[in-house]
Amino acid sequence: MLIAVMSDSHDHILKMKQAAARIRGEGAEMVIHCGDIVAPFMLFELSKVSVPVHAVFGNNDGDHFLLMKVASEVGNITFHGLFGKVDAGGDPVAFTHYREVADGLVSKQEYNVVCYGHTHAHHAEKIGKTLFINPGELMGMQGKSGFCLVETKTGEFTEITL
Image (cartoon, rainbow, N blue to C red; front, top):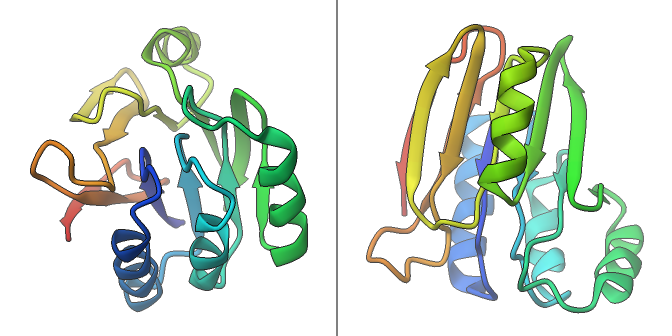
C-alpha cells in the first residue's frame, strides 16, 4: 500500500495545504502523521487528503482533547496517543513521535515500516525487514519542507520536497 508519512507540521497551514494536494495527486491510500500537528485547526486541512489519517501526539501538541474532538468531527483522522500501529493493506506499520520509542519497535522486527518524527531531520534505513523512517519536517524550519511516500510492501520510499 502506498502511504504518506509526515511529521512536525507545527501550524504551517500553507505547507499542509500543499502536502494534502500532493498526497491526493500521488494516490496515497493512507497518511501517517508522527506528531507535532500543534493546533486543532490544522486537522481541517489535513482531512482534505480524503483518505484515512492516523496520528500520534508530539511534545508540542498541547490540547489533546480538542485535537481528538476536531478529529472526530472531520471523520477521517484517528489519534493513537503516543504510539500507533495500523494494518496498511496487510502490512504492519508502527509510528510514534520519539526516536527512542521507534528504536524499540524496530528491534522487535514485527513491522514492515516504523515511522517517527521529533528531530525535524529526514532519516531512512532498512534494518532487517523493517524500513525505519523519519520523514523530516513539514514546517520547513530547517530549510527543507516535505514528507515521504512509502510503499509498505517493498519498503521503497520517495522523499517529497515542497
